[in-house]
Length: 237
Image 1 (cartoon, rainbow, N blue to C red):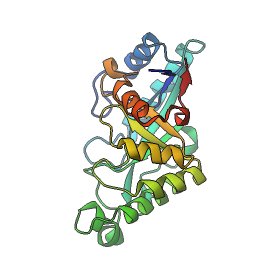
Image 2: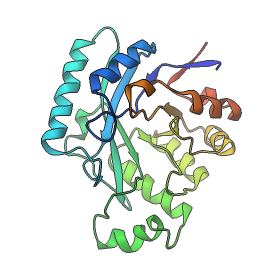
Image 3: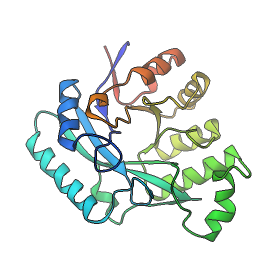
Image 4: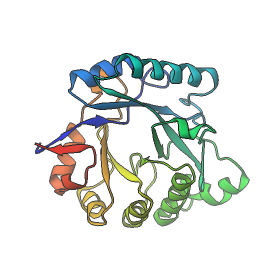
């Protein structure tokens, strides 16, 4: 791989549906030689895996402690992977500005926020009327509303209009993820995103400490698309 990925902003722990602790993820990132790592658990709107209430408070306190413990060795970031709850809607917390990294994506097991979401946005989510352009508009509106930094795994569970998504994300300064747990973008789509001038970011989407910093699948996809210059968390070696 002609580039080195130096940061992993998308990792999970046993606070949601992963294995291992936040501390183990940080140690794994150190072992991989990363400069920066975030724990970005699912937001409270996810029915099955959402981290909310006292549990989220405990996680945030633990991340603050890890930042102090590992200061000077690796940058530890407090993240959150929000859920698209409807057209332009997400489970963005009131304390959004206290998070270093906000990721947003469409996930299953997320109930619609209201009847309008079910009747309009839900048509696409339930594949009754699957419209990739409309899907992209809904995700973008949600991402802009919560001032997201990253849209995770585009096309997973729900097809989106990639050229339109890339153009708008470039304008909004939002990065599109090449997910290394399962690459959801084709070679041509990655090339299109880069051609639009939109930034790409590689995330491991690790659900165990052993996968933190595992960028092999995403790296292969980016190499085939000749798009490394667009990956913001990579350095040329």
